Amino acid sequence: MRCILLPLTLAIAMSIPALTETFPDTAQLKEMAARFAPTPLQVDLSGLSPGDRRALSKLIQAGHIVDRIFMEQLWSGDNALYEKLLADDTPLGRARLHLFWIYKGPWSDLDAHKAFLPGVPERKPLGANFYPPDMTREEFDKWIAALPHDEAAKAKSFFTAIRRGSAAHRLSIVPYHRAYHSYLEEAAQLLKEAASDTTNESLRRFLNLRAQAFLDDDYYASDIAWMDLDAPIDVTIGPYETYNDELFGYKASFEAYVCLKDEAETQKLNGFSAHLQEVEDNLPLDRQYRTKLGALMPIRVVNEVLSAGDGNHGVQTAAYNLPNDEKIVQQKGSKKVMLKNVQRAKFDSTLVPISKLVLPALARKNLSFNSFFTHILAHELSHGIGPHEIRVDGRSTSVRLELKDLYSTIEEAKADVTGLFMLQYFFDNGILPGGAGAEHRLYTTYLASSFRTLRFGITEAHGRGMALQFNYFRDHGAFVTRDDGTFEVNYGKVKDAVRSLDHDLLTIEAHGDYAGAQKMLNRLAVIRPEVQRALDRMSQIPVDIEPVFVTADELVPPKHSYR
Image 1 (cartoon, rainbow, N blue to C red):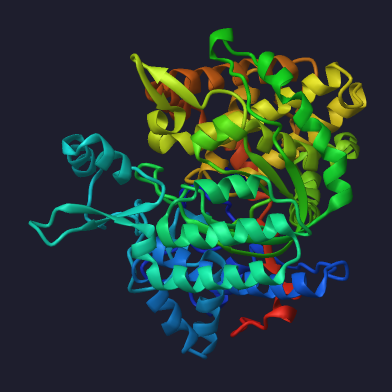
Image 2: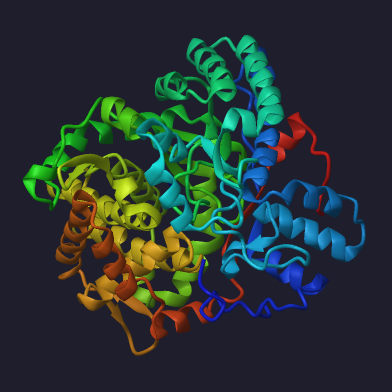
């Protein structure tokens, strides 16, 4: 999972004209791109050995290939459209190319995935390119029901695409290593070359195992090696998140993060992992659903050199918690990676100006980057606690499989709220320095940050999950709307509201309660008028950053530029 839209009638209201059949002109495209603030990301490489610098260059090249794989997964015509845009050097063509590259496709995530280019589907396909474009949920479910158990499991696997076969137009299963063969062979070779360049044994082991996984789709051994990775270069590359599969949430998109480890910051945060079982044992959840966690969950604080594929389209990832394979999470836990330079850029570019519009003057003194950073960490840690493998009607299953298309939204909301619960527990038990000041900084920063997320809209898991949280806290008196249109925290009610909502979300997951999740989302995952009015005031504030990979581009010069 990662930490990072609204229908057009609700979306962001940023003086951007509604996308229509006429499609945006050059000026309108530039306005749409301006919602992302260009932000240079420079990382100091002076501590790397010559071998690691060579390895870093190979990994950047592999990241560029991941962009192409992801685009193929997003839509079957995406790569061809990209090549066509590259050849158009007119002002309109360059503006279209720029916005296309932000989203890695022709649909605006901030405008309900609506097309901003002609000649493409009006909206991003729900199943992206993981399934045939004419396939329905009902057809897939009926097909699955008739398959042997092993084949049905392959059809639902993270690492298979579904295609139309030649026989009677029937559905068929195509493993990723065949679907993206040429790209994966090239990427695997680059990983092997990087492995031979580095002097770090854990990095060498991971890269060699991941190169093999690209060729056979068996990611288990390389995921274990990634959990144990401890090197100056911290790299995540492969198919992980399932957000783009809006039909079922089964299929993983390729992504890459090439980073350098921040050793000092990592050491400061690693103590959190030692207390996760304690948090699990005190969750506001019926005792029978609490679990025994695996090994301590490693935390890495890194500075991003390059992100690619699913890791770099639209709103940027601030942190992630992987792997998503429940078998590995049960056996070994998961690893939390905090992208500190990205988080700092988001805080400065978006959250500080947002706070001036949504918080009363006296509350703004409680806005804190440390609270922002620490809650993102707690969010990522919270993906690893609570229910995962569950039993429903006497059968073994998982929360992901039972909640299907609602899983990502409920899980993101659960991670946010459990993160608040965790930090309050740490304050109350002396694990973190507490007191009223720490609590006020945490909840005030969270309140302001909720508007940063709500601007992403409610057709995406993070934004929809945040709408659920905000409205719940508003209904329970934890958030209060002032007469001047700003918002404040009721510190006397917020802790009980956090505990109550956490109980509800964790219980939905423990029961695999799809109907309960749908009912909660129908009621709470909406943008209410007072929130919309606040969002309307933010028209000149960027929604997020557009990273400019200065260090990566110096090592591996890009083939094109949009500026």
